[in-house]
Amino acid sequence: MIISASRRSDIPAFYGEWFMNRLRAGEVLVRNPMQPKQVSRIVLSPETVDAFVFWTKNPAAFLPYLQEIDAMGYPYYFLFTVTPYGTDIEPGIPDKRQIVETFRRISGMIGPERTVWRYDPIILTPELTPQWHMRAFGRLSEELSGSTERCIVSFFDEYRKVKNRMRHIHCVLPDKTVMGAMAEQFARTAQERNITLCTCSEDIDLSCSGIAHSRCIDSELLQRISGVTLRHGVKKDKSQRRNCGCVESRDIGSYDTCTHGCLYCYAVSDHLDAFRSKSDGDSSSPMLCDRVRKSDTVTTPRQSSRAAQHQQLPFSFDLPNPDL
Image (cartoon, rainbow, N blue to C red; front, side):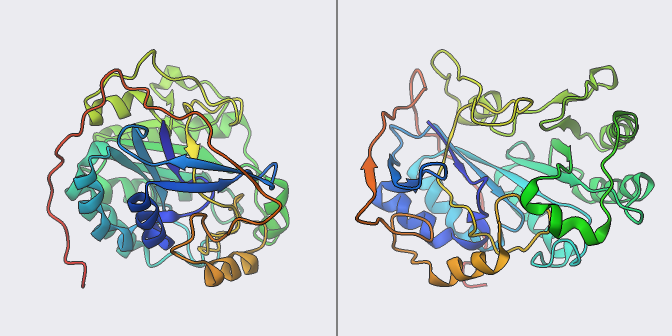
């Protein structure tokens, strides 16, 4: 079982203490966002968890916990989003120089292969033109060179819940010609920095430019970093979009809990609700920013490692002083 932490919230940025409490307790409860009265109990143990995939935009507060996760024997990697946008689009993200430094730090601790860069989403406006993005991508790829081996790019999708939030910046949805030209330029720039460029959930075929469709939840990467072979491989996650190549995983996050405030975020319907959820959240609760109600039905679905032989690997790296 692969644990996604999380498409629904930035757990490393805001809920590291909660996550570690769940890992120590050996289980987590997750509410079904489509059927809110259904709650799943997910067992967290080296016997059931093949790996964790952490999605984040600012994992600085999470770094002191890595040593304990390592000691427990869990493989993991980070999907680390670094974009060039300012506070008009990403109001809760710190200065990008600080984000880049955090990226470099975590890569130095766990290695470039396990620190995957996401340049996502690519937003086009009258000001944020393709040329602007090409310059911005060039700067970021230079700063992150040597700290990552792969960059995943994706163009903005106009989800219904974010359409009104994005209206004032006059977002332009590109056609395939523009997308292809930008991706080809990105790929050339990335190649110069020894970074492989991939796309995420795009139906455009860029294989002629050496750009492959990526899997953010990637079984091949998981097998390389864990040293185990997954039994019979893993299936495509049917719950994701048609063009998503991710393999099956269980997400342990909750919607409307991320307080970065990004205009384009599909995981938050109301940013004020997200702040309230975070403020009311209990790090000792078995469920992220939530609790079990009397009307809930809690079940424990079948869970097991897909590894043919699950082994604990001794990762070793230096950690920052937790008191800093």
